[in-house]
Image (cartoon, rainbow, N blue to C red):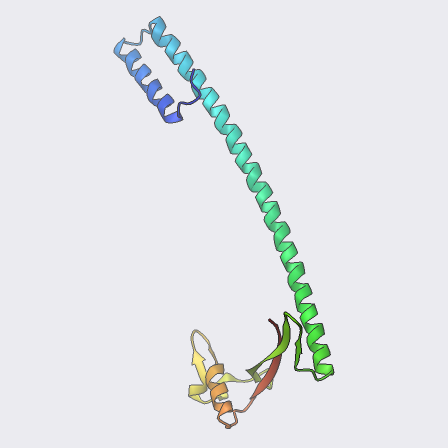
Length: 170
C-alpha cells in the first residue's frame, strides 16, 4: 500500500478494478478482490491524511485570524496614541507660538491647509448658484468651486474658508 498515490490515482485504479469485475460478469477472482480491498484501504488512509491536513490548515487559519485581530487592535491603540501625542505637541506649540521645532535628526512644524466650511449647519443647497453645486443622485455643494470663488475674494452666503495647521513630523 503506497501513501504517495493521489486520490485521483486511487480512484482510477478502483474504476479499472470495477471494470475488470464487470468484464468477469461480477465474479471476482482472488486477485481482483484483494486489489479492491487494498484500494479501499488506500483510499481510507488517504482520506484520513487529507482530513488531518484540512484540520491543520483550519487551525492555522484560526490562529492567523487571531493574530490579525491582535495586530488590528495594536494598530488602533498606536494610531490613537499618535493622534493624542500630535494634538498635545501641536497645542503646546500653538500656546507658545512656536512654528517649528528642530532636533538633530527630526523636525516638527505645521502644514497649513485651507478648507471650505459651511457657516450654518442647515444650508439649503438650492440657494447656491448653479455652478456652485453638483448633482449626482442628490444635489450637494461643489466645495472645490466654492473654494475657488472664496479665494478670488467673492462672498458665498453660508460658506467661509477656514485655515488649519496640521502637525507634521519629518
